[in-house]
Length: 135
Image (cartoon, rainbow, N blue to C red; front, side, top):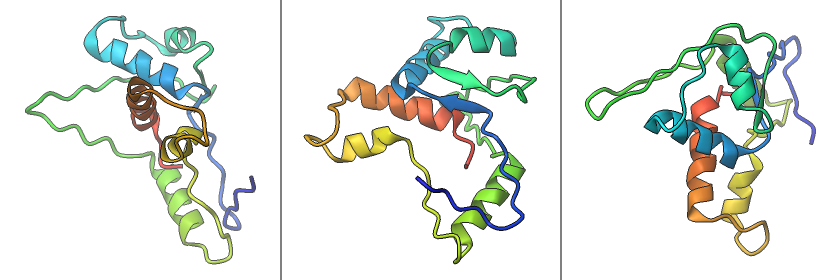
């Protein structure tokens, strides 16, 4: 699929490329509930996500933030990434489409696409929104 970019826009590589959104969400659920220890650094993150996602070489730091029922955490996207996405989505010459992971189509077309269980959908959504970077 062709992804149009505005002229002069710099394509900032995604900090993480997910191959398995269900696996990613399951990992995030394990971190959130304490069933798995949080990675202490980017190397440990890469090890834990082996076969699930690839962390870009440009990522050198790692921070986990978890809200509570009383504290809302608002995570802001990377400035350059949101600016590039706004440019791409508002450029009338680009005819770009907002890229969504395949599992959204799988969910909205039951019987046509692979069947996902409710827990698969939950984990895929958690995996997506946890690492989404407004591409």
